[in-house]
Amino acid sequence: MMNSNFRFPISDFRSPFARIAKVPVVAIPQSAIGNRQSTMGFTLIETLVAAVIISLAVLSIVAAQQAYHRQTDGAQQTATALSLANEMREMMLNLPLDDPATGDMTFGPETDEWAGTAAGSVGFFDDLDDFAGSSGTGLTFNPPINAQRQPISDMTRWTQQITVENVDPANISGPAAANGSTDLLRVTVIVKYVQPGATASTEITRLSWVVAAPQG
Image 1 (tube, rainbow, N blue to C red):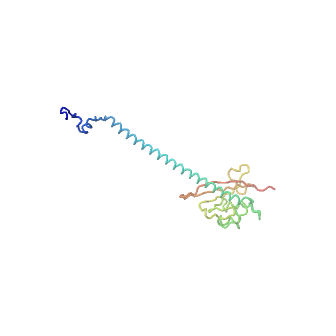
Image 2: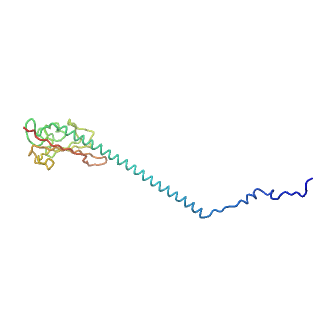
């Protein structure tokens, strides 16, 4: 027989939700929330600063590449200009100062050697002073010519300017002397180039050498 005095504890029949309801709620201080928001805001600022630094680094790399390409282009142009100047020097290397056939000491091309233009006349030149031109101030070749006196037709941006002048033997780098006044000639070749997008040519290089009349 069941003991009528037995009683189940009332607490054992309480709902589980009642137990959960007893879990204490921890309040988060408002100061902690504010600090978290400040931390998030500072991280965003750091990200923006990093983005700016990266952008500046990229721009620096691009600028360095552009400078490298400009230097490379400049080196190539200098090499080309020196080659064109040496073509002229090679062409004139074995020419005498005066006309070898007649011994005529006329400064500039003889009448039968001048065809009106530098390109049309260069094939008749047989001495150095012919390259002073009919006016005595020099000649310009555009397009430039090679050592065989042939025009280089695909280099129209390039120009060879040549001057031939007498100089004082005591001062070969000084001002020119009067035409035909000395037995020493200074030949100067200036090579110019029209840069892409430009209308006027700029000097890239120049080459000078001195030729003396043979002794004896």
